[in-house]
Length: 160
Image 1: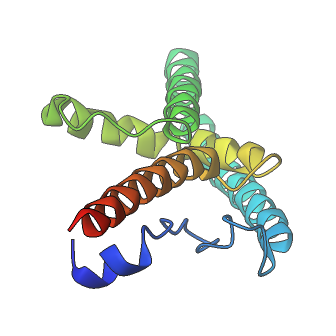
Image 2: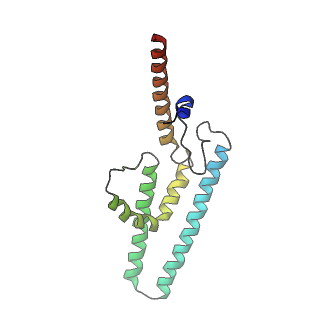
Image 3: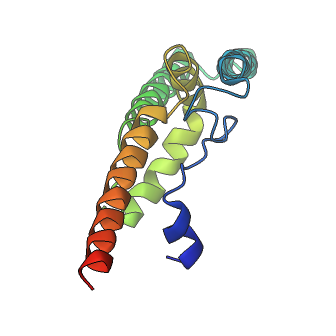
């Protein structure tokens, strides 16, 4: 850490689309939540429309009912997995010790299920900025550690 960060204390981690407005719920925080949620819903709807066009293309191509069913199930499963993964990501940090190759193999499934991620994001904006609770907890813990360090260094300075 630099001397400047020691002097000013920990800084809150910015959240995409919210910056650090989540700390005090200022700077248009409520409007940003509404905008981010609405934007995620509109994007999810547009994505669903694109997927529907793709599905209709399969129907026009007459690939058969089995392929149509498999594609629909695949998108549903990928969407559910992406929703769950995104939702869990708002409450805990990813485990960096996990196998990196497993993460890479999940990326394609998460990409296919992008609508689930967008829906999770939109739902989370109903209660908070996505990831706010996690970052608030980490920020408050960092403030407590900082205050302890400052108090200890202040006591050492008085003993001299």
